[in-house]
Each structure stands twice: as C-alpha cells, then as structure tokens.
Image 1 (tube, rainbow, N blue to C red):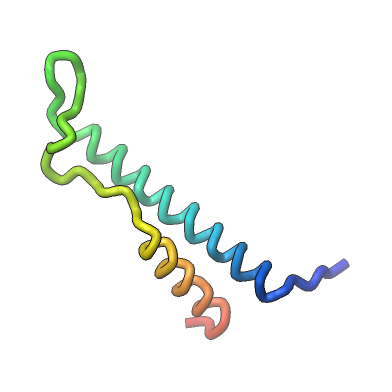
Image 2 (image 1 turned 180 degrees about the vertical axis):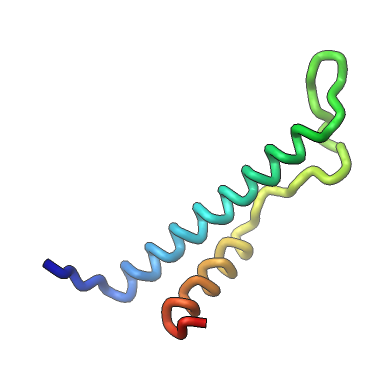
Length: 76
C-alpha cells in the first residue's frame, strides 16, 4: 500500500538525510585528522593543531538539503 507524504514530510525527511550526511562526513574527517595529529605525553590533542576540521554549521546542512531536494525534483 502506497502512502503519500506531504511536501512538509518530504522536506523534513530530506533535511534529516542532509543532517546525517553532513554529520557522518564530519566524523570521517575528524577520525582521519585525529589519527594523523601529534599528541602530547598524556595522549591529548591540542585544539589548535593544524588542519582540525570544523564542526558543520547550519548553512552547510541546509545547502546539502537543498542540493538533495533539487536532485529529487530535477534528477540533476
């Protein structure tokens, strides 16, 4: 049985997918960076270490969601 979703439900689902995508991408960057960075004698990483990835901001999630939604609408 097919269930039709409202536009709001579809956009909310796309936004959730975009949030998960951006979070997973950040976690991947963080893991790769933390494995390469120098640690002190206690194993701690300096928060000022070069190349530390920045946590994603809302605009990054929204832009990813927009691109995903555009793909669904246009196929491009």
